[in-house]
Length: 183
Image (cartoon, rainbow, N blue to C red; front, side, top):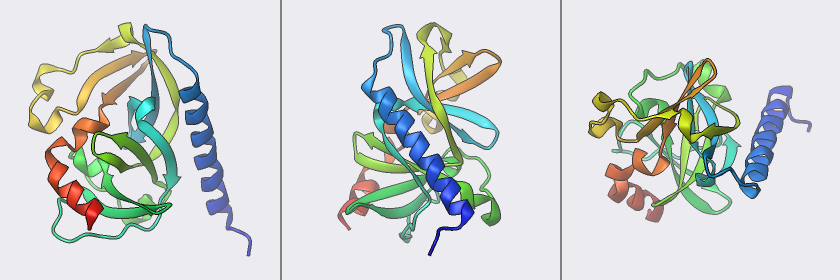
Protein backbone atom coordinates (compact mmCIF):
# COMPACT_ATOMS: atom_id res chain seq x y z
CA UNK A 1 0.00 0.00 0.00
CA UNK A 2 1.44 3.38 -1.01
CA UNK A 3 1.89 6.03 1.69
CA UNK A 4 -0.57 8.90 1.53
CA UNK A 5 0.76 12.17 0.04
CA UNK A 6 0.96 13.91 3.45
CA UNK A 7 3.06 11.08 4.93
CA UNK A 8 5.32 11.04 1.86
CA UNK A 9 5.84 14.83 2.10
CA UNK A 10 6.60 14.59 5.82
CA UNK A 11 9.04 11.77 5.20
CA UNK A 12 10.87 13.81 2.54
CA UNK A 13 10.97 16.83 4.89
CA UNK A 14 12.45 14.72 7.71
CA UNK A 15 14.98 13.12 5.35
CA UNK A 16 16.03 16.54 4.04
CA UNK A 17 16.44 17.91 7.59
CA UNK A 18 18.52 14.91 8.65
CA UNK A 19 20.71 15.14 5.53
CA UNK A 20 21.33 18.84 6.20
CA UNK A 21 22.16 18.17 9.86
CA UNK A 22 24.52 15.33 8.96
CA UNK A 23 26.28 17.43 6.32
CA UNK A 24 26.66 20.37 8.71
CA UNK A 25 27.97 18.18 11.53
CA UNK A 26 30.68 16.76 9.30
CA UNK A 27 31.79 20.26 8.34
CA UNK A 28 33.19 22.85 10.65
CA UNK A 29 32.11 26.32 11.59
CA UNK A 30 34.60 29.11 11.77
CA UNK A 31 35.87 29.88 15.26
CA UNK A 32 33.85 33.07 15.21
CA UNK A 33 30.51 31.39 14.44
CA UNK A 34 28.16 28.65 15.62
CA UNK A 35 26.23 26.07 13.61
CA UNK A 36 22.64 25.73 14.77
CA UNK A 37 19.47 23.93 13.83
CA UNK A 38 16.73 26.53 13.39
CA UNK A 39 13.24 25.41 14.39
CA UNK A 40 9.92 27.07 15.04
CA UNK A 41 7.42 27.15 17.82
CA UNK A 42 4.46 29.38 17.03
CA UNK A 43 5.72 32.32 15.01
CA UNK A 44 9.10 32.39 16.78
CA UNK A 45 12.36 30.95 15.47
CA UNK A 46 14.67 29.20 17.91
CA UNK A 47 18.11 27.72 17.45
CA UNK A 48 20.02 24.94 19.12
CA UNK A 49 23.60 23.70 18.80
CA UNK A 50 23.85 21.35 15.84
CA UNK A 51 26.23 19.10 17.75
CA UNK A 52 23.44 18.26 20.18
CA UNK A 53 20.99 17.13 17.50
CA UNK A 54 21.18 13.47 16.55
CA UNK A 55 18.26 13.47 14.15
CA UNK A 56 14.78 14.72 13.34
CA UNK A 57 11.78 12.39 13.13
CA UNK A 58 8.15 12.84 12.30
CA UNK A 59 5.67 12.46 15.10
CA UNK A 60 5.53 8.85 16.19
CA UNK A 61 3.64 7.01 18.86
CA UNK A 62 4.35 8.47 22.28
CA UNK A 63 3.48 6.32 25.27
CA UNK A 64 1.95 8.57 27.91
CA UNK A 65 3.30 8.37 31.43
CA UNK A 66 0.97 9.31 34.29
CA UNK A 67 1.81 11.84 36.99
CA UNK A 68 4.48 13.78 35.12
CA UNK A 69 4.75 17.47 34.39
CA UNK A 70 2.45 18.64 31.56
CA UNK A 71 5.28 19.28 29.12
CA UNK A 72 6.61 15.72 29.42
CA UNK A 73 4.50 13.94 26.83
CA UNK A 74 5.85 10.46 27.56
CA UNK A 75 8.37 8.15 25.96
CA UNK A 76 8.94 7.00 22.41
CA UNK A 77 10.80 4.00 21.05
CA UNK A 78 13.65 5.07 18.78
CA UNK A 79 15.12 1.89 17.30
CA UNK A 80 15.01 0.12 20.64
CA UNK A 81 15.99 3.11 22.78
CA UNK A 82 13.42 4.53 25.17
CA UNK A 83 13.52 8.31 24.68
CA UNK A 84 11.67 10.68 27.03
CA UNK A 85 9.81 13.18 24.85
CA UNK A 86 8.94 16.74 25.82
CA UNK A 87 6.73 19.31 24.16
CA UNK A 88 8.99 22.34 23.98
CA UNK A 89 6.04 24.69 23.39
CA UNK A 90 4.51 23.77 26.75
CA UNK A 91 7.90 23.82 28.50
CA UNK A 92 8.39 27.39 27.31
CA UNK A 93 5.04 28.36 28.81
CA UNK A 94 3.26 28.91 25.49
CA UNK A 95 -0.36 27.93 24.88
CA UNK A 96 -0.87 24.41 23.58
CA UNK A 97 -1.75 23.86 19.92
CA UNK A 98 -5.13 22.53 18.96
CA UNK A 99 -5.30 18.82 18.10
CA UNK A 100 -5.85 19.52 14.41
CA UNK A 101 -2.74 21.75 14.27
CA UNK A 102 -0.50 19.19 15.97
CA UNK A 103 -0.18 16.76 13.05
CA UNK A 104 2.78 18.38 11.31
CA UNK A 105 5.02 18.54 14.37
CA UNK A 106 8.52 17.04 14.43
CA UNK A 107 10.62 15.47 17.15
CA UNK A 108 14.22 16.62 17.40
CA UNK A 109 16.28 13.93 19.09
CA UNK A 110 18.99 15.69 21.10
CA UNK A 111 22.07 14.32 22.82
CA UNK A 112 22.05 15.81 26.30
CA UNK A 113 23.86 15.30 29.59
CA UNK A 114 20.95 12.97 30.45
CA UNK A 115 21.19 10.92 27.27
CA UNK A 116 18.83 11.12 24.33
CA UNK A 117 15.77 13.33 24.73
CA UNK A 118 13.05 14.09 22.21
CA UNK A 119 11.86 17.68 21.83
CA UNK A 120 8.56 18.21 20.01
CA UNK A 121 8.69 21.32 17.81
CA UNK A 122 6.43 22.64 15.08
CA UNK A 123 8.95 22.59 12.26
CA UNK A 124 12.65 22.25 11.65
CA UNK A 125 13.65 24.98 9.23
CA UNK A 126 17.32 24.72 8.37
CA UNK A 127 20.88 24.64 9.57
CA UNK A 128 22.18 28.17 10.08
CA UNK A 129 25.59 29.67 10.70
CA UNK A 130 25.43 32.33 13.38
CA UNK A 131 28.38 34.71 13.77
CA UNK A 132 29.20 35.04 17.47
CA UNK A 133 29.25 38.83 17.14
CA UNK A 134 25.54 38.68 16.17
CA UNK A 135 24.55 37.04 19.47
CA UNK A 136 23.28 39.25 22.27
CA UNK A 137 23.18 37.99 25.85
CA UNK A 138 19.89 36.82 27.26
CA UNK A 139 18.02 39.78 28.80
CA UNK A 140 18.55 39.98 32.58
CA UNK A 141 14.85 39.59 33.39
CA UNK A 142 14.83 36.22 31.57
CA UNK A 143 17.43 34.70 33.87
CA UNK A 144 15.05 33.36 36.51
CA UNK A 145 14.71 29.61 37.07
CA UNK A 146 12.04 29.27 34.38
CA UNK A 147 14.15 30.85 31.65
CA UNK A 148 17.68 29.67 32.34
CA UNK A 149 17.67 27.57 29.16
CA UNK A 150 17.84 30.66 26.91
CA UNK A 151 21.48 31.41 26.22
CA UNK A 152 21.21 34.38 23.88
CA UNK A 153 19.44 36.00 20.98
CA UNK A 154 20.97 36.09 17.51
CA UNK A 155 20.23 39.03 15.24
CA UNK A 156 20.28 37.78 11.65
CA UNK A 157 19.19 40.33 9.08
CA UNK A 158 15.59 41.17 10.05
CA UNK A 159 15.12 37.99 12.10
CA UNK A 160 15.71 37.20 15.74
CA UNK A 161 16.64 33.66 16.76
CA UNK A 162 16.33 32.74 20.43
CA UNK A 163 19.11 30.31 21.31
CA UNK A 164 18.25 27.39 23.58
CA UNK A 165 20.58 25.00 25.40
CA UNK A 166 18.85 21.59 25.30
CA UNK A 167 20.74 20.48 28.43
CA UNK A 168 19.35 23.32 30.49
CA UNK A 169 15.73 22.76 29.42
CA UNK A 170 15.45 19.67 31.62
CA UNK A 171 18.12 20.10 34.31
CA UNK A 172 15.50 20.31 37.05
CA UNK A 173 13.86 17.08 35.82
CA UNK A 174 16.90 14.77 35.91
CA UNK A 175 15.51 12.27 38.43
CA UNK A 176 12.13 12.09 36.71
CA UNK A 177 13.67 11.60 33.27
CA UNK A 178 16.06 8.93 34.54
CA UNK A 179 13.04 7.08 35.96
CA UNK A 180 11.25 7.27 32.59
CA UNK A 181 14.22 5.72 30.79
CA UNK A 182 14.57 2.83 33.22
CA UNK A 183 10.85 2.15 33.50
